[in-house]
Amino acid sequence: MTQLAETLTGPRMNAPAGANRLFAAGARASYRSHVSTYGSLNVAEIGPDLINQLDRSGLTGRGGAGFAVARKFGAMPQRRRSSLWQSSAVVIANGAEGEPRSLKDETLMRDSPHLVIDGLLAAAAAVHATTMYLYTTGTSLESVASAIAERRDASAIRLVEAPETFISGEASAVVNAIQTGAAVPTDRVARLTASGLKQRPTLVHNVETLAHVALIARYGSEWFRSAGTDRDPGTRLVTVSGAVARDRVLEVPGDVRIIDILTFCGATESTIAGVLVGGFHGAWLKREQLGVNLSNAALAPYGAQPGAGILYVLGVNRCGLQFSAEIVRYLARESARQCGPCMFGLPEMATLLERIASGDRDPRLAQELATLSESVIGRGSCHHPNGTSRLVMSTLSAFAEDAKAHLRGQCLRVETR
Amino acid sequence: MAITPNRYRLHIDWTKCDGRGLCTELLPDLLGRDKWGYPVALMEERGSRSDVFVPSSRLEAATDAVNLCPLIALALIAPATSGRDAPARDG
Image (tube, rainbow over the protein chains, first blue to last red):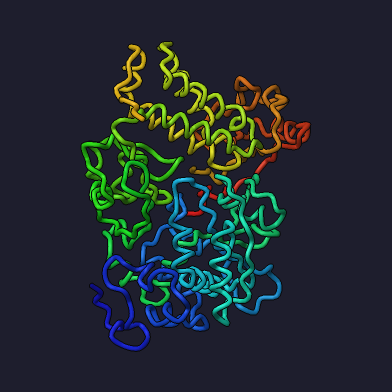
């Protein structure tokens, strides 16, 4: 696969070919099998040039927003190692998935904790950070703690437990949780990279993002781009759940069609009503749209994005309006209840969608719901109202025929069992 | 998303705002109220719904709004300062 000359020499001979990158060392990889699979990472050699490598790699964040990783690194203040006058930088590995349908970060930290640790060390070296945190929920914290105990170069990493809430992984909530113990978003007028943890420049990256950083630091940007497409290079982790044989975490390159991922997991196209892409802040694709690639570029025309890599398969016998109403009610409950439009708007959105789903034949409900959903966008300290609004609008669009049937007193789906 | 750096913006801290409505009375041309009383930007072509564009003719009223807000939920952001963090979740 790779054409890099440097893969033929030295420790870089181990660059994994193909799309099996993040789990190449096997399940619950020890430090020994990690090093024998990937080679060791010489952190002392890493400096700001890693940011150029990341820029050329085209890596985007794997936590949800899909922001260009090199741009976030580049937003950190440029400084010399010995600067005493500036407050020192902080890097945080964020493993709080929040999304109930996501298992990929937990799986990554269980099976490849050393890649996450390497990525955190590499990121800290690139921005001359003196403080490193890894923030995640209880089970994963144990995996990472035992991995740290296996090696000598990671003892400076501080571990902080994240609560099992939907928004605990939002970037400002992560910083707030570490600083004050409250995992809720904060109001910001400056970027975290300018003023984050205790006003220090702070880089928050998802753990999968950092695992890719660890590989790019070893094998370079060309190797990273040898999987995927020009516009969506590399691989990403996905969690497939719903109407499939069992929930699965897979690593896929950017040029794989969603239907092929689902078929691989044992789903049959004719039994799919729709697929929720990206997570609970994501968007629905209808069955006839599943030929699209799971990538930022390919999904953009559908108003969707890979997000945190979630694919939830809705079976033909389930009502998408009913299922979405359950999600919106969940999201309303998960509001931090700090911002008025979210605290009052989301429960009302859930109620309107529940009425449509349960067969209320008032024809004004859909328009009322759309207007309300639009009104909460951008009016909060985080994107929870925006994401909830996106899901509602996508539901009304993808299941428009279902909503019409409900107005006639019918449901197109047969909810069985 | 696009922030015009050469303009003043009125930043709303939604975690503090309680919808008292004083700002909407001082700036009726810039801010309306939603059904719960929270401010709604009336002109969104500049700035955003949390960082509301303030024309120079309205700077004085905007300053009053900042000083008089009982919840201290407003801030006037001078031109050419950096914007808010773009991605909510890590990206």
